[in-house]
Image (cartoon, rainbow, N blue to C red; front, side, top):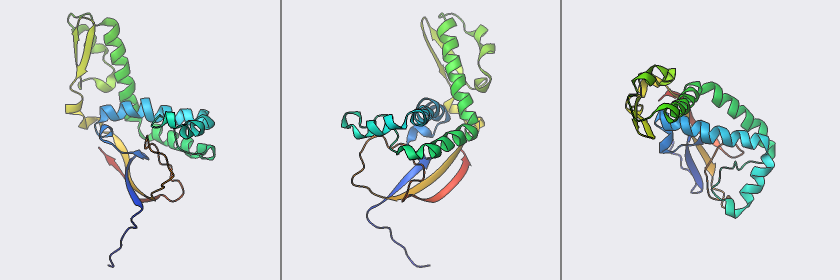
Length: 192
């Protein structure tokens, strides 16, 4: 096998479901919340109004904001990514919705006394994984991170190779939809 070298202007990017991978996407609870509250919302916003994203990306005062750096012609690719994400990430979507429901339940009914009557009402995806606590108007849940393996999250991991573009603006690294010049060097689906 002959050695091969990369040019100095090649970037290697770790990707999680075609989004830039960062540490908060490793634990399933934070991954679920970022998936629903950031990735899905950004993709839905781009599909609904791609021109707004194009204008926002050009505005330096909005650098790093939740905008996709794609032209409107990529709406169909983003729509396909959104559909695939919601289909493949049903467990994370259910966990995120269950966390929101549990937070709502605790906010409405936790009064600082025993939470035992609320335990049977914990949403199904979280039963057996969380402990709820309450101090007056303050409430919390814990324990999910330590027992996360049975949640069986599935993620699509890859590394993207692309040439560094000196004209690209910095900020939110965002989504990679297989734009021209990107090469996927490894793609795998794994149980995280």
